Image (spheres, rainbow, N blue to C red):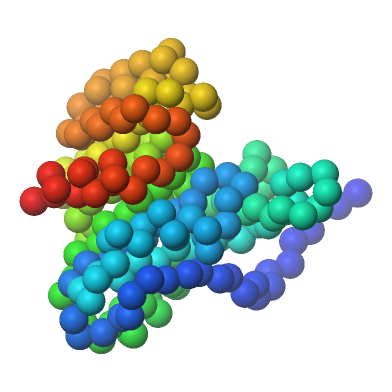
Length: 217
């Protein structure tokens, strides 16, 4: 048996709140977690919407049924199978999306904030370091920073954006041992970050997010 590959085009979908244009001064890119769909995920960010803010929720390219009744559908950014190809395709997808959005906005006088939730956090991090864009804030919500982004060559870009780690005290998927291991990893790297702990589980809490945004410069 010989493994072969074929390059094809694939239609990707994303959802947005707000309208791109001359008034746009802030763009949020929010990446959902495993088994989620962006049309529902973006609803968590409605409090951010105003005439100056555009919120984009790209959807992962791999969709699947998440229950045995074939009623609910979710999406995944990657699995362990063909992992590197998925990573490259995700980066290409997000770069293409931003190219399109910049054209629609019509200027580049805006700040970009990125939020990666759970599995979407790893995708967000890897994209940041393969993009030529400047990012103001990175929010890692209930997700790990991949070790492959904590390199010497990436130090400058890490230092040029604000990194926020957000963790739930009752997160059923991330125990205390996992939290401690993760915080040791970023501390050993000497990453400059701000930590937010909230009294909740593995999901986005809009009120926690709005309180966090108050700390932005």
